Amino acid sequence: MNGLGSVIIISGPSGAGKSTAIRRILEIRKDVYFSVSATTRAKRPGEIDGVNYLFVSQETFDGMVERGELLEHAGYVNHCYGTPALPVKEALEKGQTVLLDIEVQGAVRIKSVIPEAVLVFLIPSRLSTLRKRLSERSTEEPEVVENRIKTAMVELEQICNYDYVVFNDDLQEAVRELDAIITAARCRRSIRAPQIETTM
Ligand code: ADP
Ligand code: 5GP
Image (cartoon, rainbow, N blue to C red; front, side):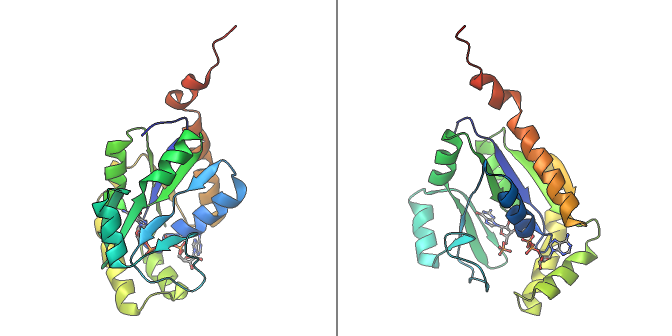
C-alpha cells in the first residue's frame, strides 16, 4: 500500500483519551483522514455510525474478513474491530495523513504491511487515572471497565513496538505533541523526496 500520505497509528489503554485527542486533531488539521473502523461492539450514546465506527453485526464483520476487506482485525474485550482497507488506500493515494485508533496487535500488523507507519502510544503518566476516567465516562458496566483496565497492563507490555509515547495528563499538551508528530511524519524523506519536481 503506497502513496504520498503517511500513516499514524495511535494506541493506548481504554480511557487514555485516544478518541478525545483525535477529535481535537481532526478539528485543527484538515490534512488528516481518520480511518473509521468496523466493530461489533454496541454504539455508545453520542457515537455516530460511519463517523466513530461502522457498527456491524458479527455476521457482517465475518463477511468483511472473509472477503479480505480489512487491512487488519483483532479481538478486544469480547468484541471484534477491524480497519477497512479501501478508504486507507484511497486517502494515501490522495496524499492525506491517515490516522488510525487501533489496539496493539493491529498496530503491529499494520506496521508489517506499511513499514513507514509511525506508531504512537498515548497514555496518562499514572495508570490509576484510567479507572477514574472510565468510571466518569460511564459508557461501560463496572465489570467491563475492570476488564479494560486489566487489558491495559498487557497493552503496556507492547510499548516497545512504538516510536513515540505521548502522556495525556493535560489534553492540550497531548494534542500539541500529537500535532508535532503528525507534522514530522509528513516531512519524512520517504514521503517528501518523491514530491520534488525535478523538471528545470
Ligand atoms: P479512549 O478513546 O482512549 O478510550 P476517551 O477519549 O474516551 O478515551 O477518554 C476517556 C475519558 O477521559 C473521557 O470521558 C474524556 O472526556 C476524558 N479525558 C480524555 N483526556 C483527558 C484529560 N487529559 N484530562 C481529563 N480527562 C480526559
Ligand atoms: P473502544 O471500544 O474503546 O472504542 O475501542 C477498544 C479498542 O479497540 C481500542 O484499543 C481501540 O484502539 C481498538 N480499535 C478500534 N478500532 C480498531 C481496529 O480497526 N483495529 C484494531 N486492531 N483495534 C481497533
